Amino acid sequence: MASNTDDRTIRSIKPGGSGRIVGLADGDRTYRQRLLSMGATPGTRFEVLRVAPLGDPYEIRLRGFTLSLRKHESDMLLVEPVGENTAEPQA
Image (cartoon, rainbow, N blue to C red; front, side, top):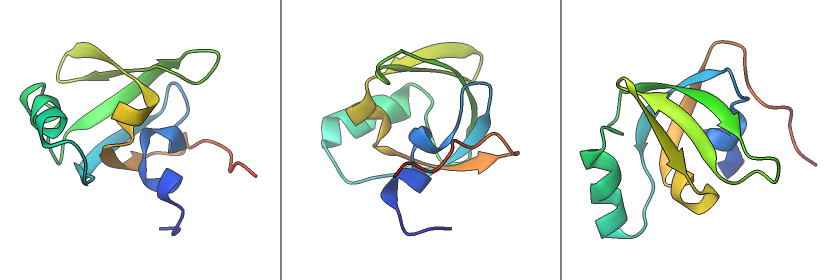
């Protein structure tokens, strides 16, 4: 996997694409616990449903419900794409 941090976040997956949560990045412990309690645990598959026009927030579906995450919140989720629906590299 590339060394670019964006390659391991939800930003690397296009709407309609799927991924799997592989871990949580360092950050606010309280918010990390909130993500875990909402089912965003390592190994969980998700689908990116849509991204707002300005790139914030992201709407994902995991464990049968829809979750909207601000960009800085979604960056706490370390993910790997599942399938071919990854975003184009940004310059």
